[in-house]
Length: 98
Image 1 (tube, rainbow, N blue to C red):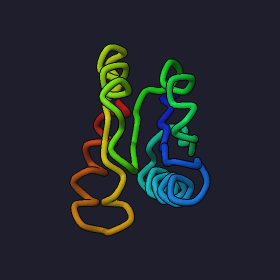
Image 2 (image 1 turned 90 degrees about the horizontal axis):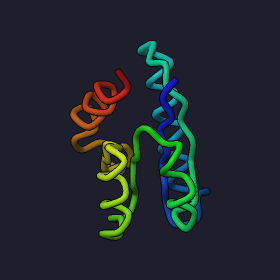
Image 3 (image 1 turned 180 degrees about the horizontal axis):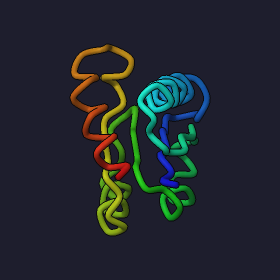
């Protein structure tokens, strides 16, 4: 099973909200993917076991380089808060789970 991480500054409020939203959408659509909210400060510890990375605040260049090196697709999470562009990003994430 793939593992999707959602990272925000504290790993609590925003990332948990988006992670729960993704979990509900995945369950409704039959997508088999584990979703976890994580603390951005621990991102280098989380990336080695992640398959998909959803960020809240724009990640540092080093984080993006590490994700690219590990071939981990990276997606913006803000559309899951605003609703703007949510379906498009969601569909891209679902495609990355296959």
